[in-house]
Image (cartoon, rainbow, N blue to C red; front, side):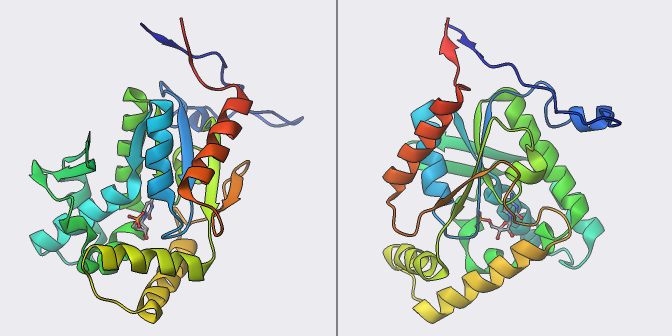
Amino acid sequence: MRWQVVNLKPLPCLRRGEFINPASLSNATEDRLLVITVDGPAAAGKSTVARALARRLGFRYLDTGALYRAVTWKALEAGVDMTDARQLTAVAQRARIELKPDSQGLRVLCDGCDVTREIRTPEVTQNIYHVADEPPVRKVLIEQQRQFSRRHDLVAEGRDQGTEVFPDAEVKFYLDASVEERARRRLSDLVESGKDASLEEVTCEITERDARDRSRPMGALRKASGAVVLDSTDMTAEEVVELMVREIEGRGVLPCRS
Ligand code: C5P
Protein backbone atom coordinates (compact mmCIF):
# COMPACT_ATOMS: atom_id res chain seq x y z
CA MET A 1 0.00 0.00 0.00
CA ARG A 2 1.35 3.43 -0.95
CA TRP A 3 0.84 6.80 0.70
CA GLN A 4 -0.41 9.46 -1.58
CA VAL A 5 0.04 13.16 -0.99
CA VAL A 6 -3.22 15.02 -1.56
CA ASN A 7 -1.89 18.56 -1.43
CA LEU A 8 0.58 19.79 -3.97
CA LYS A 9 3.08 22.28 -2.62
CA PRO A 10 2.21 25.80 -3.77
CA LEU A 11 4.88 27.91 -5.38
CA PRO A 12 5.89 30.91 -3.31
CA CYS A 13 3.72 33.96 -4.01
CA LEU A 14 5.52 36.52 -6.10
CA ARG A 15 4.93 40.22 -5.96
CA ARG A 16 5.35 42.35 -9.07
CA GLY A 17 9.04 42.67 -9.91
CA GLU A 18 10.11 39.63 -7.88
CA PHE A 19 11.79 36.62 -9.42
CA ILE A 20 12.04 33.08 -8.17
CA ASN A 21 15.57 32.41 -7.05
CA PRO A 22 16.23 28.79 -8.15
CA ALA A 23 18.53 28.32 -5.16
CA SER A 24 15.66 29.07 -2.82
CA LEU A 25 13.60 26.31 -4.42
CA SER A 26 16.29 23.64 -4.24
CA ASN A 27 17.66 22.25 -0.98
CA ALA A 28 14.66 22.51 1.24
CA THR A 29 11.89 21.51 -1.11
CA GLU A 30 13.53 19.15 -3.56
CA ASP A 31 12.53 15.51 -3.23
CA ARG A 32 11.44 15.79 0.34
CA LEU A 33 8.46 14.06 1.93
CA LEU A 34 6.06 15.67 4.41
CA VAL A 35 7.56 17.77 7.21
CA ILE A 36 5.96 19.15 10.38
CA THR A 37 8.32 21.37 12.38
CA VAL A 38 8.33 21.92 16.14
CA ASP A 39 10.66 24.65 17.36
CA GLY A 40 10.93 26.35 20.71
CA PRO A 41 13.14 27.06 23.72
CA ALA A 42 14.77 24.47 25.99
CA ALA A 43 12.46 22.34 28.15
CA ALA A 44 9.24 23.58 26.53
CA GLY A 45 8.23 19.94 26.07
CA LYS A 46 9.17 19.76 22.39
CA SER A 47 10.69 16.27 22.49
CA THR A 48 7.78 14.65 24.30
CA VAL A 49 5.25 16.32 22.08
CA ALA A 50 7.13 15.83 18.80
CA ARG A 51 7.73 12.14 19.54
CA ALA A 52 4.05 11.59 20.40
CA LEU A 53 2.92 13.56 17.35
CA ALA A 54 5.19 11.51 15.07
CA ARG A 55 3.75 8.29 16.52
CA ARG A 56 0.20 9.58 15.98
CA LEU A 57 0.86 10.49 12.37
CA GLY A 58 3.05 7.48 11.53
CA PHE A 59 5.93 9.87 10.75
CA ARG A 60 9.57 9.65 11.89
CA TYR A 61 10.67 11.84 14.78
CA LEU A 62 13.80 13.87 14.00
CA ASP A 63 15.52 15.07 17.18
CA THR A 64 17.92 17.66 15.74
CA GLY A 65 19.27 18.53 19.20
CA ALA A 66 20.62 14.97 19.30
CA LEU A 67 22.72 15.71 16.19
CA TYR A 68 24.28 18.80 17.80
CA ARG A 69 24.80 16.82 21.00
CA ALA A 70 26.42 13.88 19.18
CA VAL A 71 28.90 16.15 17.38
CA THR A 72 29.72 17.87 20.69
CA TRP A 73 30.24 14.49 22.37
CA LYS A 74 32.47 13.31 19.52
CA ALA A 75 34.54 16.52 19.58
CA LEU A 76 35.04 16.26 23.36
CA GLU A 77 35.96 12.56 23.02
CA ALA A 78 38.46 13.35 20.28
CA GLY A 79 39.95 16.14 22.40
CA VAL A 80 39.69 18.71 19.62
CA ASP A 81 40.03 22.40 20.35
CA MET A 82 36.40 23.41 20.97
CA THR A 83 37.13 26.96 19.82
CA ASP A 84 38.50 25.84 16.43
CA ALA A 85 35.70 25.98 13.84
CA ARG A 86 37.69 23.99 11.27
CA GLN A 87 38.28 21.10 13.63
CA LEU A 88 34.64 21.10 14.74
CA THR A 89 33.45 21.12 11.13
CA ALA A 90 35.74 18.18 10.33
CA VAL A 91 34.25 16.25 13.26
CA ALA A 92 30.72 17.01 12.02
CA GLN A 93 31.61 15.92 8.48
CA ARG A 94 33.19 12.65 9.58
CA ALA A 95 30.81 11.58 12.34
CA ARG A 96 28.26 8.98 11.20
CA ILE A 97 25.23 9.79 13.33
CA GLU A 98 22.24 7.47 13.29
CA LEU A 99 18.90 8.02 15.02
CA LYS A 100 17.23 4.66 15.59
CA PRO A 101 13.69 4.52 16.91
CA ASP A 102 13.09 1.69 19.40
CA SER A 103 10.59 0.79 22.12
CA GLN A 104 12.43 3.06 24.63
CA GLY A 105 12.30 6.08 22.33
CA LEU A 106 15.21 7.05 20.14
CA ARG A 107 18.69 5.53 20.27
CA VAL A 108 21.54 7.74 19.08
CA LEU A 109 24.54 6.07 17.50
CA CYS A 110 27.74 7.87 16.63
CA ASP A 111 30.17 5.92 14.46
CA GLY A 112 28.39 2.74 15.52
CA CYS A 113 28.66 3.52 19.25
CA ASP A 114 25.47 3.94 21.30
CA VAL A 115 25.74 7.43 22.84
CA THR A 116 22.09 7.90 23.81
CA ARG A 117 22.99 8.59 27.44
CA GLU A 118 26.41 10.16 26.91
CA ILE A 119 25.04 13.03 24.81
CA ARG A 120 22.80 14.17 27.71
CA THR A 121 25.57 14.79 30.25
CA PRO A 122 26.03 18.32 31.69
CA GLU A 123 29.49 18.44 30.05
CA VAL A 124 27.97 17.97 26.60
CA THR A 125 25.13 20.44 27.30
CA GLN A 126 27.59 23.08 28.52
CA ASN A 127 29.77 22.70 25.40
CA ILE A 128 27.08 22.52 22.71
CA TYR A 129 27.26 26.22 21.98
CA HIS A 130 30.78 25.81 20.52
CA VAL A 131 29.28 23.50 17.90
CA ALA A 132 25.85 25.13 17.45
CA ASP A 133 27.29 28.65 17.07
CA GLU A 134 29.46 27.68 14.07
CA PRO A 135 27.73 28.23 10.69
CA PRO A 136 29.96 25.68 8.86
CA VAL A 137 28.99 22.99 11.37
CA ARG A 138 25.33 23.96 11.09
CA LYS A 139 25.53 23.64 7.29
CA VAL A 140 26.79 20.05 7.59
CA LEU A 141 24.03 19.15 10.05
CA ILE A 142 21.33 20.95 8.07
CA GLU A 143 22.20 18.85 5.04
CA GLN A 144 21.88 15.70 7.16
CA GLN A 145 18.48 16.87 8.41
CA ARG A 146 17.30 17.42 4.84
CA GLN A 147 18.57 13.96 3.92
CA PHE A 148 16.24 12.51 6.56
CA SER A 149 13.33 14.34 4.95
CA ARG A 150 14.05 12.65 1.61
CA ARG A 151 13.60 9.23 3.21
CA HIS A 152 10.81 9.78 5.74
CA ASP A 153 7.79 11.91 6.52
CA LEU A 154 9.08 13.86 9.52
CA VAL A 155 8.18 15.62 12.70
CA ALA A 156 11.37 17.67 12.95
CA GLU A 157 12.13 19.22 16.33
CA GLY A 158 14.73 21.84 17.20
CA ARG A 159 15.36 25.57 17.11
CA ASP A 160 15.66 26.37 13.39
CA GLN A 161 13.48 23.77 11.71
CA GLY A 162 10.73 26.10 10.52
CA THR A 163 13.01 29.05 9.86
CA GLU A 164 16.11 27.66 8.12
CA VAL A 165 16.00 23.91 7.58
CA PHE A 166 12.44 23.46 6.31
CA PRO A 167 11.09 26.98 5.68
CA ASP A 168 8.45 25.44 3.39
CA ALA A 169 7.29 22.76 5.86
CA GLU A 170 3.64 21.74 5.57
CA VAL A 171 2.85 22.85 9.14
CA LYS A 172 5.10 24.71 11.59
CA PHE A 173 4.69 24.93 15.35
CA TYR A 174 6.47 27.08 17.91
CA LEU A 175 6.10 25.54 21.35
CA ASP A 176 6.71 27.81 24.30
CA ALA A 177 6.15 27.80 28.08
CA SER A 178 7.08 30.15 30.91
CA VAL A 179 10.66 29.95 32.20
CA GLU A 180 9.34 28.92 35.63
CA GLU A 181 7.36 26.02 34.21
CA ARG A 182 10.20 24.91 31.96
CA ALA A 183 12.62 24.94 34.90
CA ARG A 184 10.15 22.96 37.00
CA ARG A 185 9.78 20.33 34.26
CA ARG A 186 13.53 20.07 33.73
CA LEU A 187 14.12 19.69 37.47
CA SER A 188 11.54 16.94 37.73
CA ASP A 189 13.21 15.08 34.80
CA LEU A 190 16.58 15.41 36.55
CA VAL A 191 15.23 14.18 39.88
CA GLU A 192 13.53 11.26 38.13
CA SER A 193 16.84 10.22 36.56
CA GLY A 194 18.53 10.35 39.97
CA LYS A 195 20.40 13.64 39.45
CA ASP A 196 20.76 16.41 41.95
CA ALA A 197 20.07 20.11 41.18
CA SER A 198 18.20 23.08 42.60
CA LEU A 199 15.41 25.01 40.91
CA GLU A 200 17.68 28.11 40.87
CA GLU A 201 20.47 26.23 39.07
CA VAL A 202 18.10 24.81 36.48
CA THR A 203 16.43 28.20 35.92
CA CYS A 204 19.82 29.79 35.43
CA GLU A 205 20.95 27.08 32.97
CA ILE A 206 17.74 27.40 30.92
CA THR A 207 17.88 31.20 30.85
CA GLU A 208 21.50 31.17 29.69
CA ARG A 209 20.79 28.57 27.00
CA ASP A 210 17.75 30.56 25.77
CA ALA A 211 19.89 33.69 25.44
CA ARG A 212 22.54 31.82 23.44
CA ASP A 213 19.98 30.01 21.30
CA ARG A 214 18.25 33.31 20.46
CA SER A 215 21.37 35.24 19.56
CA ARG A 216 23.53 32.99 17.38
CA PRO A 217 24.34 34.35 13.92
CA MET A 218 22.86 31.36 12.06
CA GLY A 219 20.03 29.11 13.27
CA ALA A 220 18.90 31.45 16.03
CA LEU A 221 15.76 30.43 17.86
CA ARG A 222 12.81 32.47 16.65
CA LYS A 223 9.26 31.92 15.58
CA ALA A 224 9.11 30.90 11.92
CA SER A 225 6.87 32.83 9.60
CA GLY A 226 3.47 31.14 9.55
CA ALA A 227 4.20 29.09 12.66
CA VAL A 228 1.37 28.25 15.03
CA VAL A 229 2.43 29.38 18.51
CA LEU A 230 1.37 27.11 21.38
CA ASP A 231 1.98 28.00 25.00
CA SER A 232 2.16 24.75 26.93
CA THR A 233 2.55 26.35 30.39
CA ASP A 234 -0.87 25.17 31.56
CA MET A 235 -1.30 22.26 29.18
CA THR A 236 -0.44 18.59 29.30
CA ALA A 237 1.60 17.04 26.49
CA GLU A 238 -1.52 15.12 25.40
CA GLU A 239 -3.50 18.35 25.09
CA VAL A 240 -0.74 19.95 23.01
CA VAL A 241 -0.55 16.94 20.69
CA GLU A 242 -4.34 16.97 20.30
CA LEU A 243 -4.25 20.64 19.26
CA MET A 244 -1.44 19.95 16.81
CA VAL A 245 -3.26 17.02 15.21
CA ARG A 246 -6.38 19.14 14.82
CA GLU A 247 -4.35 21.93 13.20
CA ILE A 248 -2.61 19.51 10.82
CA GLU A 249 -5.86 17.79 9.87
CA GLY A 250 -7.47 21.18 9.33
CA ARG A 251 -4.79 22.08 6.78
CA GLY A 252 -5.56 18.97 4.67
CA VAL A 253 -1.89 18.09 4.26
CA LEU A 254 -2.06 14.54 5.57
CA PRO A 255 -1.61 11.72 3.12
CA CYS A 256 -4.49 9.41 2.28
CA ARG A 257 -4.15 5.74 1.42
CA SER A 258 -4.84 4.87 -2.20
O1 C5P B 1 16.99 20.17 21.97
P1 C5P B 1 18.20 20.04 22.83
O2 C5P B 1 18.07 20.65 24.18
O3 C5P B 1 18.73 18.64 22.89
O4 C5P B 1 19.30 20.91 22.05
C1 C5P B 1 20.55 21.12 22.61
C2 C5P B 1 21.19 22.36 22.01
O5 C5P B 1 21.52 22.11 20.65
C3 C5P B 1 20.32 23.62 22.01
O6 C5P B 1 20.40 24.35 23.21
C4 C5P B 1 20.91 24.39 20.85
O7 C5P B 1 22.04 25.11 21.28
C5 C5P B 1 21.39 23.30 19.90
N1 C5P B 1 20.45 23.10 18.80
C6 C5P B 1 20.52 23.95 17.73
N2 C5P B 1 19.69 23.75 16.66
C7 C5P B 1 18.81 22.76 16.64
C8 C5P B 1 18.70 21.89 17.74
C9 C5P B 1 19.53 22.10 18.82
O8 C5P B 1 21.33 24.87 17.73
N3 C5P B 1 18.04 22.58 15.57
